[in-house]
Length: 395
Ligand SMILES: Nc1nc2c(c(=O)[nH]1)N[C@H]1C(S)=C(S)[C@@H](COP(=O)(O)OP(=O)(O)OC[C@H]3O[C@@H](n4cnc5c(N)ncnc54)[C@H](O)[C@@H]3O)O[C@H]1N2
Ligand code: MOO
Ligand SMILES: [Mg+2]
Image (cartoon, rainbow, N blue to C red; front, side, top):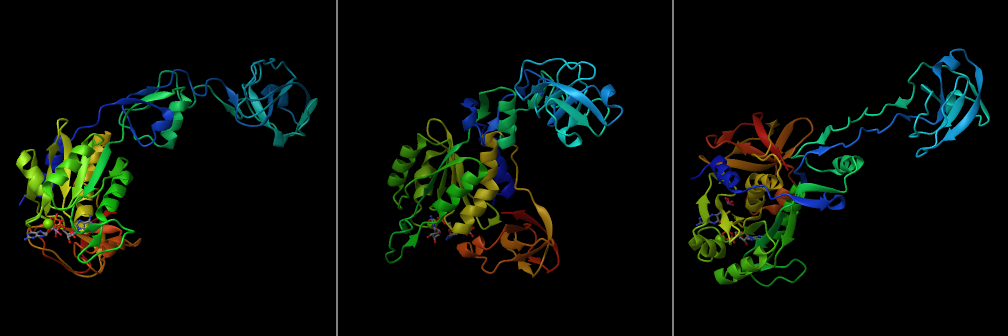
C-alpha cells in the first residue's frame, strides 16, 4: 500500500498555482496576492492631528493656564491653512493637516473649548498628538508581499495606497460530483435501498471553507458513460474536480471504470483508515486535477482534509503541506489497524485532552459531526493506552 505522505507528495507535485489575474478590489477578498504592493506616497501623506484640539507652539504653553487667540479652524480635508504664529492657536480636528508653525496639539479636553480664544489648562511638549508623515509606510515601501492571503485588512491597505485593481491568484473553481445509484437529493422522499446524498454537501462546504469556489454538480448513478458525460459538461468551469464514491472493489464503480482506462488517473490503496481507496490524476485537454474520493462519508471528508485541502491551498498560491497537528493527551484507549495511519474522530477539550467519539465507522457521519478533531495513530501503532500523548488535527 502507498503511504499517506507519498500520496500527498504525488498530488502536490502535480497541482500548480493558478495563473495570476487582475481583479477589481471588490472581488479580491479571499484570493492570494500575486504581486508586490508598494506605497507610491508615504502614509500618512502629511503630518496630521491625532486628536480634536488646538495646534499651537509648545513654547507658548510652557506656563499654564494661558489664553491664546484662535486664528483658524481646520477640519480633515482642509487645504487652506494659515500658519500658526507665536502666541496663536488653530482649532484642529483629527486627521487634519498640522499648519506650519505649530509643533504640538493640545486635546480639547485640556482646554475650555473656546472658538474665538482658547484657555489651555494643561501643558505638553513638542510633537504631542501629531501623526508624522510616513509613520506607517514610507514612499516606495512594500506593504504586502506576493503570496499574502487577502483578508479585509489586506484589502484595506491595497486601497489605502491608492490601488483600484490588483493582481491575484484567483480562487480555484472546484466541481464536486457525487456518484451512486442509491443517492437521493435531500428534501425528496427515499425509496427502498436509497439514502440521501450528504457527501456533495460536505465536500462543497469544505471546498468553500478552504477559500476556493465550490460547485455542486447533479449526482450521477452507477453508469460510467453517464459519469463521463457529466464530467465533460462540468470541466468547462472547473480548475479541479472532486468525485465521491465508485472507487473501490465492487461491481459498480463508475468513477474507477470511467477514469481508469484514461491512463491519467491512478487508483490506489493508501495506508490509512478511513480513506483507503483513492484516485488521483488529471482529466481533459487542460489536464484538470481530479480527486476521486471514497464514498463512505467519513472517508471522503478525511480524504479531503488530508489531500484535497493542501492541493487547493497550493492552487491558491498559499503554503501547502500536510494538515497541522498539535499534541493532546488521549482519554480512553485507542485501537488502530497495523500498517495503516488512523484518523480517529475525537473531541479536543481546552485542557489539552482528546476523547474518541462514539462511533468510529467510516459511515458514521453523525459521529463525525460531533467531533472537532482527528486523532492520528501512526502506522506501526495498534494500541494506544489512555493518557498517551497523541497528535491531533483540528477540524
Ligand atoms: N471488497 C472490498 N470492499 C470495499 C473495500 C475493499 O477494499 N474491498 N473498501 C471499502 C472502503 S475502505 C471504502 S472507503 C469503500 C469505498 O467505496 P466507494 O468509493 O466505491 O463508494 P461507494 O461504493 O459508492 O459507497 C460507499 C458507501 O458510501 C455511501 N455513499 C456513497 N456516496 C455517498 C454520498 N454522496 N452521500 C452519502 N453516502 C454516500 C454508499 O451508500 C456506501 O454505503 O468501499 C469499501 N468496500
Ligand atoms: O477506508 Mo474506508 O475509507 O475504511 O471506509
Ligand atoms: Mg463501491
